[in-house]
Length: 615
Image (cartoon, rainbow, N blue to C red; front, side, top):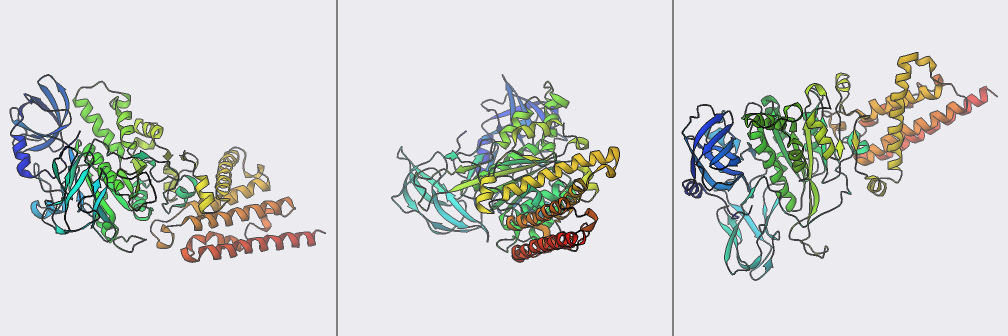
């Protein structure tokens, strides 16, 4: 659906609502039946009742329309009016998004708290972006230039971390008639463009976009580069590419929210969009209090300067969860179009699915598996498909020129299956759609092993071995595969131990249990609290794994030479291996290389002494 690319003021909105109206004839929680809503279209935004509650048309049949209300409907009466806006549910896009905390309808919660107090009232409204603030606009084009959809008109320093690039809106191209420079508000135009029909179009720094429609791009690109998260179990074993999608399923207390907060802080991206969809209020309050205090590890400025927060807690109306998900992905696509790498975190998609189930039940639709609507899979697929690495709209054919941009949106959705059961429909549907699966394990979390990602159940379908081989070390993929094989072999041996005892294992097999314990406790286990271990680069992760596998190689050689397992199971070098994660990031490579040398020396000495003693 095409829109006028300008801000919808309150005056324009009220003029629109007087044109279309209907009468409430049925109320069932967040679902309202309406008669006489003439001229409305599917997914149009409407104002419901005397309180002007925000809703959306989700079904139409003759003169009868069904509306999903995004606010609390308590006290709503039959016969109250419905007023149409003539527009779908939209996102306001422009400078001022960074650092903001919105609800699912893009109402600025911080500003509303100053005006309304700590409790959000029904029907209240406020401009999504600051209309009275002046922004420094620096033009990058001049009068007479021919511009196309997606071309950059100019730049605005939005925060210390992000330069906002003001683009020609989609579906618009033509000649620059006038371009402005200096301190401007969002209501003022920065350029006038004569389109192909000869009409002069004023373009401002802000425009609107329907949240259910994916923003256009030139073409999709291959997913060939990993999104570095700083978590060893993710980056080494189950990497997600920039522009890829992943899910984190796990039961209560397995650490989904902590992992997502760590991803927000440490991931190699320019912009983070965090959507708290139906989560507990105390968890969201913790996120809102901690993020402004956290520091961006690259730029040394507050992390909030490159983060957009969308808070929709469990005590808010369930229908608004869907709005928050779509608002988040639309904002992520907007910054992607500027040429940024964006990470969107949805915590959690299960709460969205529960909202779909509740609304579907009130619509009296035929239920699917476990009561979820039959279209659950298609809704999830539609959402995750908006991830991607793209050639941005407005790029020319020549990639060498300065205006060329590539951007990406990486999606990570938390899933909260009941009782941690991964056969839950939302988990299964998400697994079929996404390329990366990080399965959180309750048993690991109970043992205080974090991140509690189960290395047996998890997987990544994206092959990034060539990138790792070219950009880290040539044998990087080989080491990872060997480590996975050892952990898989450990799982098999532990089953044998449970049946007939450890005495049935050979020394070679017992050594595998020792080395697997090193992999689990000294490599995969990682703290999110200690600064020294909260982030681990690919280079340090590689050399840590290299040292552990070097110990394994030498131990196997020693056993084959006749050395007893007990002779080297308590070597002092084991303590050095266990403390590798405490090595400073900048000194890790030379120190671990020296440690590998000490491992070789220790085993060479051990084998030599054994051969001397045994002739």
